[in-house]
Image 1 (spheres, rainbow, N blue to C red):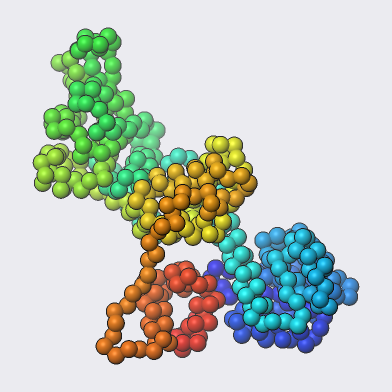
Image 2 (spheres, rainbow, N blue to C red):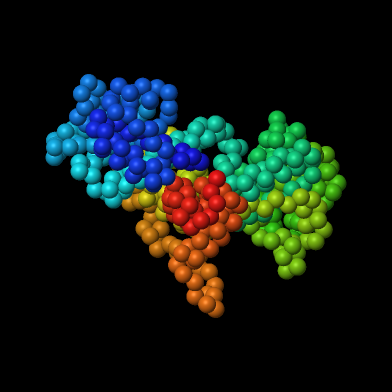
Length: 455
């Protein structure tokens, strides 16, 4: 449905009503199949996948309730709208209890009918998108999986796969919370060292002397409290990958020692005079611009060039908003399992709020939001009330064209705006519709009305 005109099944034994509704919804841009009774309607469903079923309740033979039960039993994600005549409110209520999306009464109020149908098709679209997200998430089974459908991220991962095949040093640059360690693990798992250990170390977390002991190890008696010999993280990562996080925070004297280890491929434990050969690949990461750190005197120039053979830059989450729903459902499943909760849905309102938020803390912040939501949710759905209140004060992003010397008509401005958005979306009409805040069918109608060629 995302890339096609929605297909609506109409079932009504009154020929005039059937003809009128067919005409109305075809003008709305929908594809319509019209059936004069329940039997032909069920037969049509055997051969065709519909996005919406609209059926009269009272019909001879197979009536609307029979149709409703069939749809709920075979394709429960397809919404059903009931047509009720004779001011029969009781039958409409019964249909709603049985699973109908909504009902419309005869005689029809066309604006109301159009609105109900749009709402039903939006529900169908959201359910499909959510199922597609869940299907994608179901394939992610290990901690090295990187959740993305963003084209820029996919290109970055392809570059990372190519780099992984070599043994060169890599620097991963990105804001805090963008997943630098996860990308480092991805490189490790796609390298010839995948069967070796992956060891991570935060270069700014410890005092220089303790950091030296952690990285290079120490001999017994090397300093007060060194009661036993200890191997360092370089030795622990032998044959594998050592991930040095926030490498720009490493003290300068430690940088000298690290440079020597990288150049000589050997180290000496603290308190020892005997070198130890090492076979370790180093992947470094920083949320700082390492070149700027060199210019500021915070990082040695020679270490920078030794580490910076290849640089991979992770985009912030606000630049890959299409990934937010996918990540949100991935995290929802993760925390539901961890907390033994049965929370498996996110409301449309909550998801829209997440997509609009700028996430200064990136994926780590999104993870905190979803973990909080799962903990607070009382039922199976995470709603907007389970998200932090500060999400209500987001800045709305708007398109603001420059004012022309001669004012244009609203129709011309709308046409120019739609063409601009289509250009931004590289001609992808589904993406353009999302940016515009409308569904694809509404965009199709606007293109037709404005005289813009439509495929």
